Length: 437
Ligand code: ASP
Image (cartoon, protein in one colour):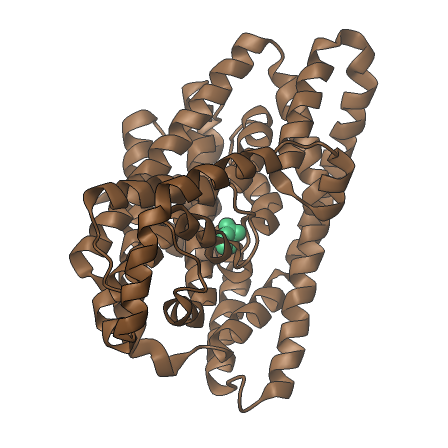
């Protein structure tokens, strides 16, 4: 049986184990379809309230979880050689996954040419103007890039914490954790303190999951209820290209990586994280799904040391699904406005998408906002592409839900790869899934 078929079967088995969440999801689609936002604003309001409340409740545990997990993760690793080894492995795997993602996305966008079907919507004068702007590209990009990196330095960690800016927080906490592990015995009480916080947040996550079915129901219903069906024709090829690229990544690339670099059976891993996959779909937020991703991975045999190091970092830095959408969206706009898509421009878009996706927060909609960085990089602003940009927003929520599945799954894949390479994967626990089903 092909790897992708094994993955599909494993997912179905995982869904069976979490049937209540799946039922919530299907009911959400049905209710959203029969109660469109425009005709039933009151129903929408109630569903939106429930959905937002669910997301807020999960987000409540994200900050304490990320901070405690990174501190435990790094201080558990101990010596600097081990830390460098794990850190570089993680970056290499995340790098391979993201570079593959943008390459697949660019290839599909070039073959399918999604922007051509929307080309007739653009006024030719506007298109000519826009083509002229591309000339300033390189200079603009250089100036912008340095500011982006400057913003990542946590000059006031408390302000970053209050604003929930994940990357500066992660940088500060990682440095702090390395210092703690160097400080020796004296840091033990503080590390124990964070171990207690971690244990308590995981407990709260278990409780929150009782709310998963109604939460996912409400979130899916509101997404479907606000569907922009009227413009579907103009962007159907864009949607197809995005879905195709995400599906290739999800069904072929991850299983293949697991096969090549580890002894982890892809089907077992997918079954193990199926609950997290459904929550990722419902919430469209990798950060909000993080507590569950950690729970699923740890319960199925990936060591706490690897999970607490790799998953919180991945939930913020590794956004291959987002990179896919950004590449296809920008190529869509370029084709729509008749800009010449040179090989150099494709490489530039791909590199910018890797940077933009890694600096993007794991929250709903962040990916399409950080696309501005890619556009600025090639000398355009979203305002200049107003029509095209607003078209992209019409089906944004659904595509966000799909790309978040990839963002979350690839984190778990990398955790499994590293755990297996480091002999920190309990294969019996992972393989034992079948017996429970
Ligand atoms: N919603 C995505 C995530 O949380 C980010 C994005 O908007 O692409 O992973």
